Image: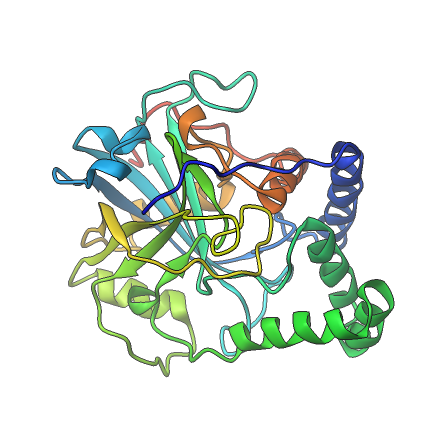
Length: 329
């Protein structure tokens, strides 16, 4: 059963540490000059619809899921590296959706009346690191790939470094599936009314392995003839041990509860309109803190993102949050 006894544990010096972490990521962003500090390569940008289901289960009927409604949305598929590299190379794969027209007071100061709700996911249900401090140490070590193991051992110790590397490699070794057939996980928790949840983006396409050289081109070709559909599901917090809020390396188990359907309709990504959508998506800021107050991100890594994403957005002069779906004409 879903639990409501979840809580965040916030260290007294957390703000100062997050400011340092943000400076590290800002330095990487400036070094690579690719716009984003991470997820620099966009595979595809597309328009979508986000339909809150009419029969959402009672425990999940909170936040924007309390009322059936269909929203316009934008989707960005990406590779996780801070540099653009070939899709054949092992990498984190990202899925981000910006849902437009969402009512309710938002979290970010100065953006309380914004109408966007963002959800960001990757293709693994956990991260190899427990918290933001380990994440920054891994990112710093990865700036010199040949020395990564040595540098990581020096910062987190031998045993923990081996665990982190094994966790990262497990994600990299996953067979590369077409984007339409890839399942994505937020891997980090968010509030949903009185509950805490993680999101799972579940594809309708069956599992398969791609031989395509370009994941974006493969999906673009698919979208010219047929739509791509996913279910958005939630996994509930049950207790502090099985579903920890502050440890991102522990996989949450449990039932997937569908709350919405994401549909990428038939569209020509190579048309003038499609290219306008792609350009807009690349300039947009996808941030899990673009959210309603009753759906706010939870946990150490999510709180660190609240610092880092805003700094990255400002550094690359990202597009302002939309107040309605752009016309793209």
